[in-house]
Image (cartoon, rainbow, N blue to C red; front, side, top):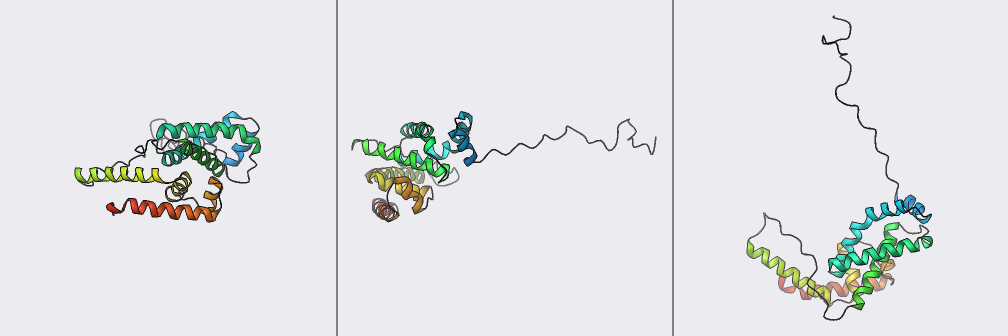
Length: 206
């Protein structure tokens, strides 16, 4: 009947259709909270940190080492080391910065232990966009990436790490110095020499 708030089908016209919205999800704790919990022995908190930062750290290790399998091992070892060293972590630096330092040091150890004949052709090659270039251009791009891989392999471990942290991960000189364990002045020098060496090596592709 008119005026009774019904739409004529026996339902309340003001009743919303569909299901009630799900309650908002609680925000995940930030790194500092998770790190405190992990330091107290909370394995779930540490696993959350691993999930949050693992992909970025694997990207870093892959670029420094040029080998995916070695990078995966390095990051896994770094997280194991971090778990054991959590009592030493007091939050003076961000957890990600602390992990950058551990992963970088692990990568440097791997690079220093390599024989001169270590593989240099495993630097990940970015996929060429389908809408760009002919097969010739794609082949040239892949050849250029192989030359870059060789050029990176000719750098010293510290030069390579500093260059990757600066050019590919946009780290500050202060952050790189802390990660590599050298002074900011030394970082600048290594990046300068790395850039010069790579520019000379890649001169044919400019």
